[in-house]
Image (cartoon, rainbow, N blue to C red; front, side, top):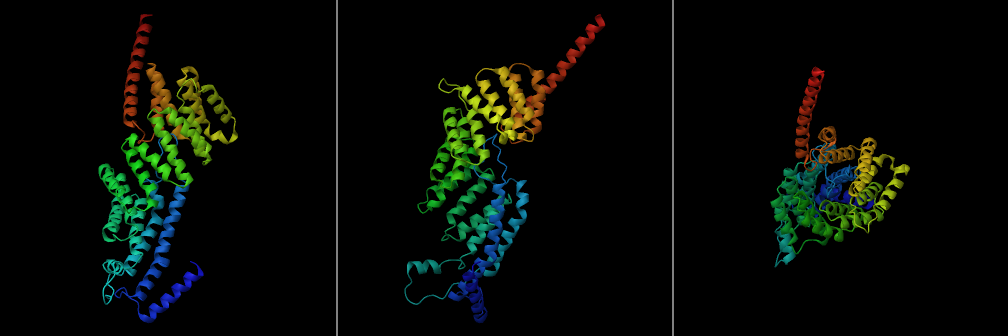
Length: 427
């Protein structure tokens, strides 16, 4: 707190003590006192704990570039455990503002005719400027605790009880985010469309609205609409690192939907935009794997670049990803033998990169299965399941295929054993 703010607070406290400030009175002095003490004491401390916790979480967020990135860096229920303590402090401090500094009693009516602004002020249900902020902070703290129902209740309360608040539209947006997390996609879409139709929506919220729309449609696997809103979010977002994240996700969506030329070009743009090294590296790898095999794209030039990356010491921990990219290109070139060779090297060099190891083992298993080499593919399917997340696309069908292959290989081994025994007996 600055020296000036501290002096103001001391003066306010002194005046309050002398005049007996109470939340049962609504005067300029009582409002000033409770606004100052609420803001620079409880609310300031609670918000500070929240901001530090979120900043540290986002800094250490474990992005998995082997699958579609989430639009926002929000914790899942397991990750939320590490944020509990700081979020509880934010909730406790915000609750203190509400219980100790809320002023709901009406001020004395001004004699004569009131202006429109004065009428709006008089008709308010709350006269402390930081109570709505406190409810909003409680909502965000519960969101980061992964308690989406409690968070939504706080956001909806801000919208319904403080319609004059500048936080109204942001609270509506976060309420929609809760609905997405709760898988209530239709309700979330309806709410986002209502927000989008608001003429008074602050310009600063438009990038967040577009990104939230994109998040919703990605969850629904409606990639066409997701593409539209990712492009909109990229155009509206001013923060470079956030804009690059949206660009990377858009490139992933293009790759996922078979628009390889768009993906190829966008990955290249991300890589040239000086992003954090891990994103730059991932963009180069994805650029290689999105190679479409057209005459104007030289696969050997891309392979040459990947081999150069292999020799770079700072890429030692990423060798598994490089070999995977090389194998993917060779597979598209029709060189299955070299592709399998590099994919097996990828599996060997992935080390602690379990996501890459899982992806590599699964691709090897798929190649062998498609060739009809069921016995050879079975252990690769089995091994991939050891490392695949259960939210991996088509996880259940992969597991079912692995289980069926295990039964098939067991039966084939039994047949081979019986045949061998009968041959031995005949001898």
